[in-house]
Length: 428
Image 1 (tube, helix red, strand yellow):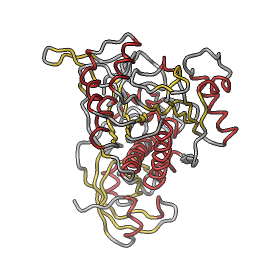
Image 2 (cartoon, rainbow, N blue to C red):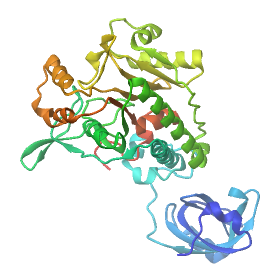
Image 3 (cartoon, helix red, strand yellow):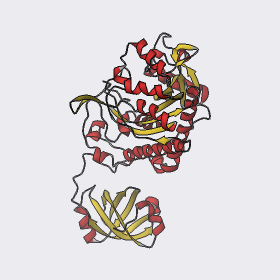
């Protein structure tokens, strides 16, 4: 099929061209009919004046896949200033069953559960598709930023023999008669690969069986992970994270400008230095109990407001989380051992990134597990690797869907997830 995309029509005025896509909308007026075609690049207006063409159009339903061959003419009131006239319409599939909502309207009127139940159709809506395009651009920017800094992309197992994150629930399954788990993160593997490449990253799914039924949690999400060796402490990791976020924002602006326009989103500026506060100071800013071991969602929102008010910034680092709330592999602050060389990055008042410096000495791992009363056996193959020499290192992980929800202002992370998995949803 020799076709062009609707976005390319302005370059073909006066030519006979072929388009193909979905019948987005029909407008059947008394003297003329209009067919709005939707393809991957946008919309095209087709004028149907001949009686036989009108009759054919009247017999079709919205979302039917069609091919249109016609002449491109200029029209300032049409999308992109052009339209197609004298069309020949060919149906490329069956007459479509219309979905239970109108895709041609500016916003989907259906409830979110209905949209998710019919995801194959609702994702065709320009706003839902635009959010996914932003995600694709963000991942491209993530990869490019780290490639430019000497990182190597890796791919690690998602079936593992032990839980990765202390305290988090896992999905257990049978693995040829043995107990196995879906990986909660590539944490162990990316640390071990620092011993191979020094700097590594991965884009892949992670699984959390935590029983949260909130607008910010998913049971499966896409994690953008990075780990780097030969660092002084967690501040080196924070600097790379800052540059990576800037690269992601730049890629979104460069590669997904139409999607930004469709969603009326302006990517925030990532400052040369993101403001940072210690956990103890963060509690004071939020007005929280000084003995709290973690930040509540309300505390995160208060810190987001503080960062905007005091620094004009949508981001803020919170460093030095209590060791009691961090995994056993976290490096403590040498000057304040009760606190960690770990951090969270908040974006518009919500945790977006968790990261920090890791332990890198074999003896420190043995001591950390013993101090917590955790057994060595389930993680022995991981811990033993540090006896062979791993440099000081650290890393971070960005939740892609949560990033998109904060960027777009979505009320629910499921609005920017193609096929979400949560406590209640396992299909489609």
